[in-house]
Image 1 (cartoon, rainbow over the protein chains, first blue to last red):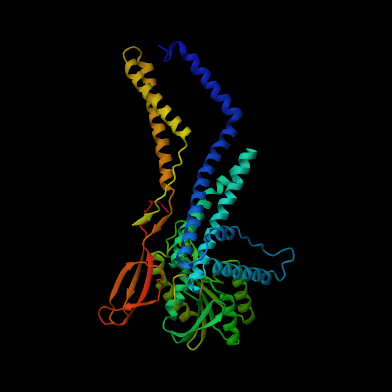
Image 2: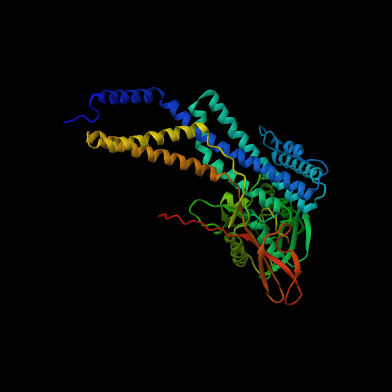
Length: 365
Length: 135
């Protein structure tokens, strides 16, 4: 039989052995370089998103804030802000400390936004603060990934690069979500996370409201023969309010005579679940650093009040980007579910608290 | 409908491009050699044909992948619509979102009954590609 490459077949054999030995001794190194390339590609994308975010923030400040000087330096300084969480070696009283630090942070952010954009009203300032926070998150993500990339490149350690390469798809998803949030915050559009706030807004529309806690309003609404105290963050600026304090105040005003608390919030869906699915359960449906959840749980424990939760499912991208139609439509379904819970769990003449949790950007009351 | 930001940075390194085009050139040479080798050595010709096709396929795939990555580098701005309704006569109008709009904001008077209209909805519509899954 004729050999395919005739007298050069030895060259093929040599090539085969060369490949075999190269992969045997340098396989891991090659793998490391491939992973580094992959991380580098994502890092490039993160840098682009971060820079675009910074650009959007600066443009928005110039457009609505009418600053006298160029705000670029102030924005760059803001993007590097950090918050140190309280020491947890002795966890007693940590919630109070955390709340204080978060309040200080919030006040500082608001003051800085006012300095950067003096011509803004309260709503615009809140929206701008949210925009800056999204840009800050993008800056932080970029810097962390860059840190691991450069560290991996310096040490050529497969394990350093591998750990960042493994979580990269999730990190990229989060970064893309923040990127789409930027424009929504800058323009003051309602976001998916505002589903709970929209439920409360629909229930309270047309009823008189009063301030119950910092950046929080309440309206007394008759629902199915019961008296409902509906709490939401004060809109339409980007704001989550302090529903924990709101619940505590209403409970104390009523001396604990509350038949049930119903919390409604947007919740992260699992893959395979539909966006806008409404589900029901028990417990304090509220995210964030945990201060408000703690306060609500303390209040319900003091008066032994049952707590129910209604959630509207969405993914991380939907939560911080402009509200999808499916989520908007789910709000009416959630209201129906709340009414059903009220009918099933309380009696006529009872008092209930309904808390619409979430960022109320683009949602009035 | 979605608008994309206009600036897309060029990011294919010249080295990668060089490697892709050298591979492409070598693969095309292999294909030409394969055609001329059919008369003299048929088996070699088949091998060259295989190498040529593999090379062309690989280099075009890498080139398209790199281009795809560049295209993906943009922040999508979805189109958001605002629904305005008259609570009295039910007249409804839908327009693009404008900065300053918010749900339950009172806007211009109704064209039909002159009553103040209300923004009742602000949302975006997303066309999701349904992926076939057994679960």
